[in-house]
Amino acid sequence: MRTIPKCETCHAQEAIWAWHPFGPGEDHCFTTLGSHYRGWIVIKVCDECKNQIEDGLPMNFVVHGKQMIGNRSSDILEIPDYVGDSLLFWEMGGK
Ligand SMILES: [Zn+2]
Image 1 (spheres, rainbow, N blue to C red):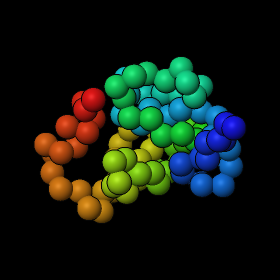
Image 2 (cartoon, rainbow, N blue to C red; image 1 turned 30 degrees about the vertical axis):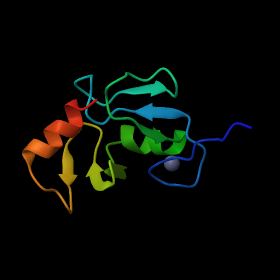
Image 3 (cartoon, protein in one colour; image 1 turned 45 degrees about the horizontal axis):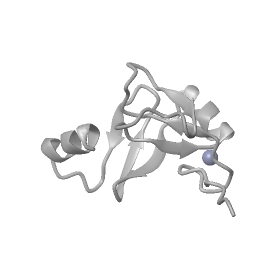
């Protein structure tokens, strides 16, 4: 039985898009789930959240257990338990 992935920003609806908040594109980047870019952080989002991201609304999401708030231009607005540049770099380039 296949599990339907839940949206990682609203946690309510079915995720159908893979959002790459950190690239590889210069702007926000969406692909369908399964055809996402390997090696880049993927946030699974539903259609509604994708629209909100495209409207420029900041979204909550979790990367490697850390809460982040970012918008479509990949600006990380707030990382409450942020510990430093090196870790973020490691996470962004990781894998
Ligand atoms: Zn959603």
